[in-house]
Amino acid sequence: MAGTLRIIIANDTEYELVAASGGARMVKGVCATPPPSPIPPWQTKELQVEAQGDGAEMEGSVTYEVKGANLDVRLCFRHTAVGAECWMEGKRLDGAKRDLEIVDLFFADAGENKRLSCDDAMRASSLSAWYHVSLQPLAEGAYVTPPPRFVHATPDGFSTVNVPEPIRTWDSPRMTQKRRKVLALIGYYFPMALRPLAAKDKDHPDEPRKRLEAPHGQGLYKDMPMWSEAAEANIPNKGTSCTGVAAALMLLATGRQVGWGFDDAPLNPAWVKYSEPQRLPSVGDLYYIYDDNAVHIRHVGFVAEVPASESEYWITADGGQKVLNKAGAGGQAAHFSKNPWKLMQPDVKKEAHAFAKPPPDILVPRIGSTDYGGMVDSGRLIGWVDVDEVDMINNGAFDAHYNEQRYHDAGAMIGILRGS
Image 1 (cartoon, rainbow, N blue to C red):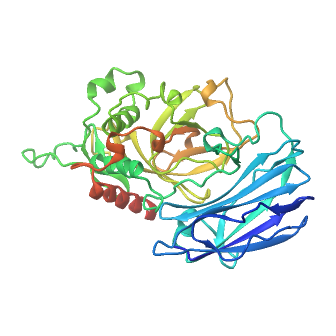
Image 2: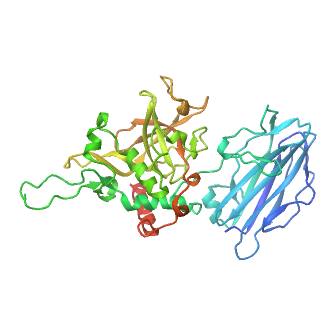
Image 3: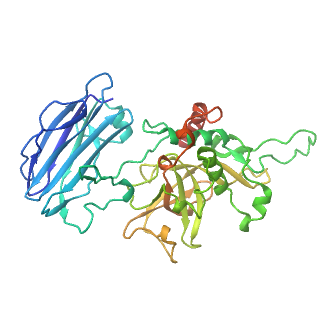
């Protein structure tokens, strides 16, 4: 945990910033230096916060009035055992002339030389955080208009203006118990296949058939209990088990079978529609891919690792896959996949469903598959179900079958794909 945090305040406005009475509001830790005040236009000042006690945690805020713009700005930070976050909140006063601009906030190392992910910030011993206070023209209606699920109104009337970083890896210190439970379920069942056995050995017909092996060194396929040959045969185009696998695992986690399929996921209260490149699903969420040519959702799976750039891969846990070993009879399988992706302009040739319409003038992620032709077989990410917003049995606590060991089993398979 960090011991010190340098808070650097850049006044990128033509107005003076004046600290509110009482200085910094500290929930955990102490403010080693008082908030600088006033901060003249176009100047930068700083203060330092220090952790205190055995937990070495820091949490608090500093509030400034933007004099002349009739606007309050609250600079918030949290560096605790459950996460590292920095964000700004704004509040219009009577006669407000401007709005607070939405900016990308992040932690850096103490020397301001390297931007840190939330996870790396949690592990650092000393940090810095830049708060660029800048303004935009007054908008009609609500104070800020970032994605709705990431806006929270505080009791004293402030609203957030940042988009939190997704949980990118299975071993992130920010992994919640609900997300760990989802991976434990995956670790228990994956890899699995509808027809997991190889053909009989002609030279040794009396020997039992061997089990086929999943790709990327994931081990031998287990039986797939939530899909059947009858189900596969009775659905046009041979059907897909991706919805069956997603629904079965979420049924075990929540006791509810609905809310995970192609038709009902966008109606789920935990549904998050894709809106901007900085806002992506986290490990454990169910992600949904859309086919803009056929105009329907084409795939659902679980997020296992979130890339930080296009040079990295999405790692996902998916049903509806092929048994790639040609010695087998083929059929539906569920295993981890390693998927290339690109941020691209949406290529919508037909009118998409309302829930799948891409945001205007925004690049959208197209996710492919290394197993099935790379980006040739790609689809557009339209949204995801945020599992932290889903009611789970016993709040996602581990049990005798879906336990800590199974969670680490899933992590080991993710590590294999990451290194492949």
